[in-house]
Image (cartoon, rainbow, N blue to C red; front, top):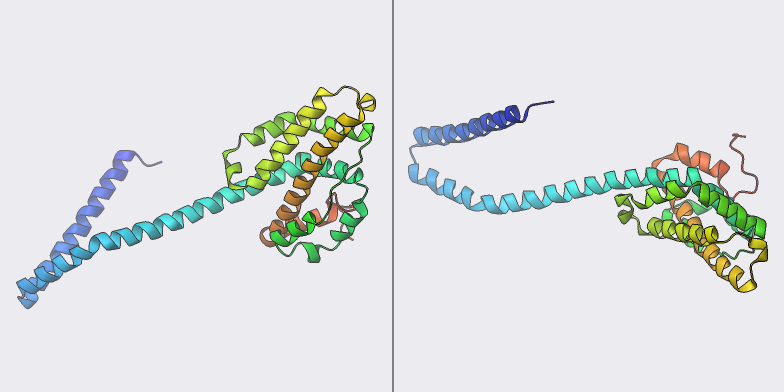
Length: 249
């Protein structure tokens, strides 16, 4: 690693060389053509445009750097989303699908990757057409509770990631999942809950289900473009498939 004093010294040397080169070229021009007034006229004219050139360069560089930084953040966020689905999201989505009375319609819609994975927008729009109703049994609620309880620390860690600000839909999903974890965590016996409370829990489940499916679809379509090898695995194992199998046939 370079010492700060050495880097500063190198910059001073570079500055001196450039400044000296410019002065030498102007001196050569004066000596060669003997037109001192014209030389100074063009020197002042060039200097007059320096602020504008500096302004343009600043805006262009700032835009390029901002774009590069955003792409870097989005790549990191893509890794976070991938980790979420690998650790928690896929199992959670599979549990929601199992409690969905219209699950066969959803599975049919996502049976052909060439149809739904054209773009993130296409995938998400297809998801939004589904009603996302759930009719969970006490065993289903207990299973969801167990998944979320086991991954509580992981989910809370994701919520602390500052990169989430770049993707509001994923932030909304994590908040919905975290709220569902809290609601289920307070219940001890799902079989004895009154209908009013079960309706309340179904609302929380359906909110998380809808957001989870939309985020999964958009993420999968994004992978098709940028990471096709990961997309290939997802199309074989995703929770919306009735016959999920990682083996390539």
